[in-house]
Image (cartoon, rainbow, N blue to C red; front, side):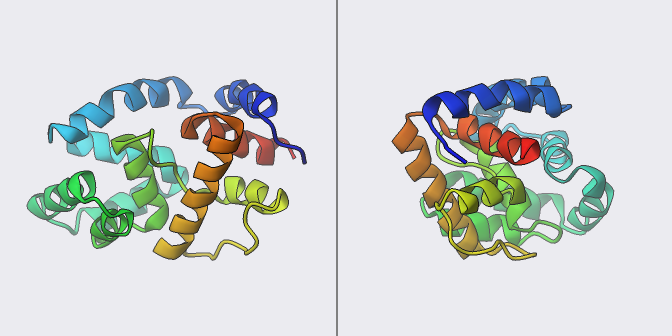
Length: 178
């Protein structure tokens, strides 16, 4: 599989066709970074991100998340917004019951889409196939795997001069279409 700026940009329209929540995703990517930065996010915002990421597993994920108190959730989200270390951001989110690295990465995406992308098995597969990643993604992705994945995404986005969101949509679509 050959990657290039043109290939990556063409895949965004395929992603839009395949992803049912595309229009709302775009709207939330515009609004949520400011909402998170100002601390004005709601549980509904968080639940939408979880639904967007996990789909059919939304109910069990939310059931586990609800085991955390509102103050605990707010404190961990605040840490994720304001910590400087990516590892600390992910660990703050994954300290919440029900939140693993994939959901944490989705939350980080909506906190700052210019800096973060969501770890996804489909995108990982394409990065592995094209030589940007050499190892298989574990069943329960770790913080280390996310850091490795994020670094590969930053390198690829820089190499082809595309933003992380375009890259993520393209990688997802390339795996679907493969």
